[in-house]
Length: 275
Length: 275
Image (tube, rainbow over all chains, first blue to last red; front, side):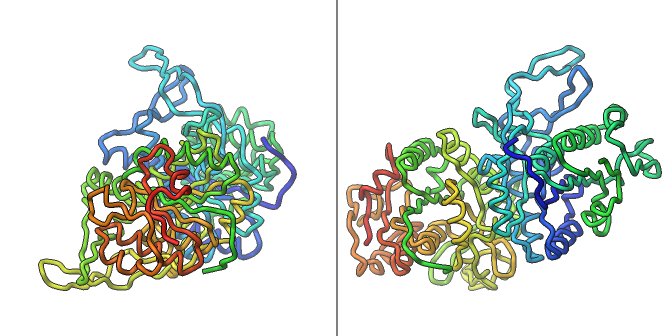
């Protein structure tokens, strides 16, 4: 982490599946920026990657760790497909829509300017056909350093960064990273006021997928319990939320990207507020 | 053009076909940057685009104007494929190799931060089956404005921009632009000392493809004649060279990207020097 002084900015993560139709998100972002808010936007692109991988005859594979976590199998070809889908397509579509609303959006991967740096996992233990196997040619890791100076330089110059995986390893290789946790590290590094993790659910649900079981407030003390109770990708969001709060972010909201004004509503506390 | 004051920077265009193996180019760039040179790198990506288009079952098409110029047919899907191939893949591969040599490289498309802006051609006249037809859904144009402030901000912060098509139209749409001419406009906007157009030929050839017929010096006065004599893509390079000199660039070198130290040798005047 480069620095951690408070900074008037919110980091917003747009969930991949909603990234397919970011119109409401981009319009809302433009309105907030027009009111003087500063945003750093982060997105993933799992669905775009899966579709392109399928079309190119290199279908996505997922591996399960002995502890039951599943993650994308990222060989070099999968990494290239991810770069094309996330950085090449989805990122530029979001930039185009934001610019269509007058936002000075600038798309960047975690590699560009070394914005997201982290350790590449040398070996991953995976359960394949019931047996624990060690995978060594995987390009995955987690963000542990954020180039705050570059982000602030861009924000101070009036640009809105739109950040996308991959990150870059300390060895200089592109690494697939979880975008929710990368957003959390970015918010922490910027000393952001808010980290908003928006996807296609109303927030953290007590009885997934029952949307009426929304947990609207989650005290810091219950994060660990919530994390183990959470399903699938929500585990990563709760983990990222905990990391962000630990590192000084004031408030994390797990919100609903499908709403009319998803960012504004999350800022107003609609969703699961963790602080 | 935003501004045109002299600036200690050279703009280097790396030809697409050599972009497939940019190792020597990136090593040379790193050495020059280590010696205090400032570079802005521009690349295209025709071959990457053609290959991806083929793999995705949307093969590249080229249209010929009544005056005999051929250009890529760029419907929306082709544009997306171009974004994936140029911005997503080739650009990030060059950034990765530069960073591997310790260069603080930052990849940007012409859309990112509105670096390259220009007019989208509302209609293109094309000769199809011998008849002149008007194509209206093409996303092509030419760069007429460069965001110099953003480029200088990045250069002053120690970053090396790596720029890739598409550009963005004044209507906010991505537009396919010729990367040689975009590099020329970029050099002009920065008031660059040198514009280096590197590809897989030694320079401008009197008797294409006879490499022994290299024209090593071309006076400004002969640019127009050279342009009409030039073959295929070389026409665009000579056109770009003329535009750059017109707009204040001191020297243009059409050089050989296949050499051991392609940028250094072009800076030393190996190739066709136009000034």
